[in-house]
Image (cartoon, rainbow, N blue to C red; front, side, top):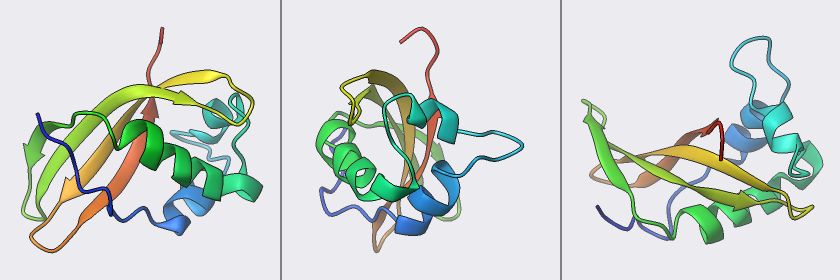
Length: 108
């Protein structure tokens, strides 16, 4: 278990052009919309990921040629105060730590 770098890179495109866009497969936007997140307030999602999830213990998972992957499981309190249970994936490389993706956790 570890704490990841608070200066972790969270790509704006990953949030507003992927997680918050309705996709035909593996859509996460509808889950995040339950907590009030959308493309117009993606900055709030970034802030909440940093403050509510990134501050939790990270568990190492897979080591790839790109770096060590970690997962952080936690609760994300959205803009409307609804709490979503999420599993987030992060990558630590020799030069940076970055946000990879987020998955809904059922029954959270």
